[in-house]
Image (cartoon, rainbow, N blue to C red; front, side):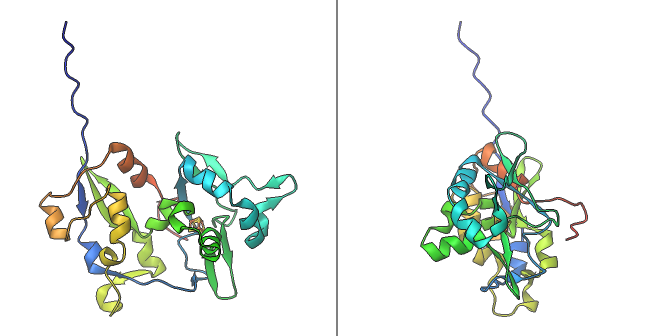
Length: 221
Ligand code: SF4
């Protein structure tokens, strides 16, 4: 007896939020201001591959952040979330354990180590961190590519008139947005609203929609 055809899996469309063009992005090349960083107060979701990559660097990372080392090895910094993914467990003050501070700045030790040793940053730094301040959020069957609201409070994102000469978030993050959407980015937000964006797997969308979620509803940091 012939089997009934399985219904095709519903695949989300990716839609670009116009905010990606309305907001500009500024990078703090020497590190974020000490007290204004996305590395405090947010939950970072990591894949098993990312955990393995970071684990392989722990000895070097602990030279930058000594608290990563403990008597019997290294601090346990990953906690189980919904399988198959894990979260980086924050310190008591809400900071990521890989964050370190200089007199003026707050920096990611994973990123710093990669730059200092010639490693490819995307090979070792979690995607959730590389994609900041861009996020995906569900919109019915679609997935909206938008800007993290917390980024406005931190100051790395602002309306374009407030950051003259700086690129829009879309311009600055085109490569990352393509990665988040499975390889393609619409040319402009208006085009995406006309539903021309490509689709990617449910799995990709699920992961990115959740990652780098605010721990606190009010976004306080
Ligand atoms: S891994 Fe690095 S970028 Fe990501 S939250 Fe931690 S310190 Fe920040």
